[in-house]
Amino acid sequence: MPDWGRQGILSEKEIDILARFLQHDPPPPPELPMEQMKKSWKVYVEPEKRPKSPQHKRNWQNFFGVVLRDVGKVPIIDGDTKELVSIVET
Image 1 (cartoon, rainbow, N blue to C red):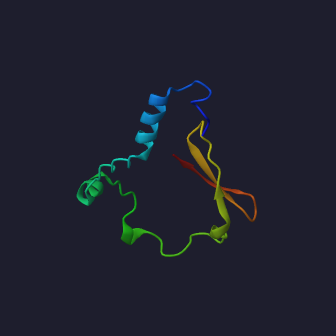
Image 2 (cartoon, rainbow, N blue to C red):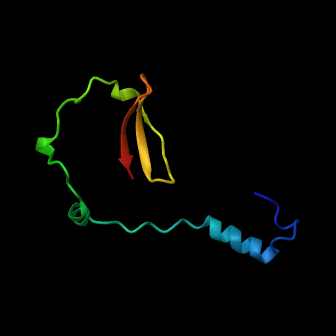
Image 3 (cartoon, rainbow, N blue to C red):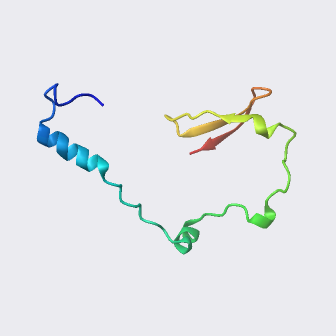
């Protein structure tokens, strides 16, 4: 941390207030009960209808994603072939 006291950015009183603030534990975040979480879920494919095995022959353990933050998408790329597998909307 910079020496804000010697640089004249903060007074001794302001440094004391800042130090006391930083020593406080943050308040706990509000918790959402599981019932409310389940109400907000959107199930697109029911669990019993989901595939039990991979639906392709690719090495899924070598997939990687690239965040395209300006367009809100994440392309999934096959690390073995460097081919685009899919694009996920975020």
